[in-house]
Image 1 (tube, rainbow, N blue to C red):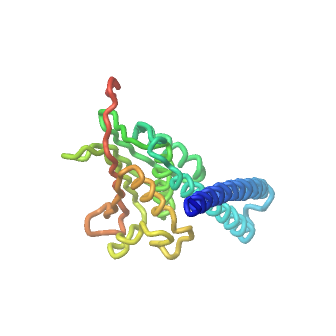
Image 2: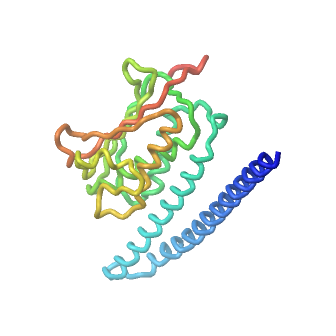
Image 3: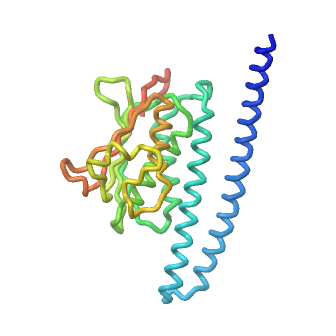
Length: 253
């Protein structure tokens, strides 16, 4: 009886510690994010004051803006990891992958207003539903961000295809970019936590790890190949697959 009581007390203490940790995490990410937005707004105002011909000032200003942008990305990734950990089966609902793509494309363009981005989409002719949550939007947006950041060209080109996996009860999303590509020797490692495929690029090393973690939570998978066979320098092709579900009485497009 005493042992059971101690076990119950230990479980209660762990639960209270978990709730406290979640509270502090929410508080920290919210406050840091708020301060980052204030700093970003101030830097945007400085753009109109600083001489556009002063290359040094413009360089430092742009560096500060990019650093804040990356800091916000890390904050968002921390929030995502917390949300993934707390997901329960009862939270899942039918999600339309076409809707996921469209929302993510809109969000991407608002995140990179100064970039020229061309996105070509090809959607299946029937409803493409999977079991998940709207956290799949973050998964897709993460991949699209990577595609933009990895592309050195003035015009960033991305192709997105939503289609059935032939012979399987699955849907797939292909995200194809024209970036610097990933060497074959690193393709198996890029989904590891804190791994950076491009040493010259700054980042948390969490983006693709989070994408893989989200997909596995919903019974999905992700793989990567070259956009052009046998030439990794021409860009990458990420392929997501998720178990397919049928929605009764849903009109086909």
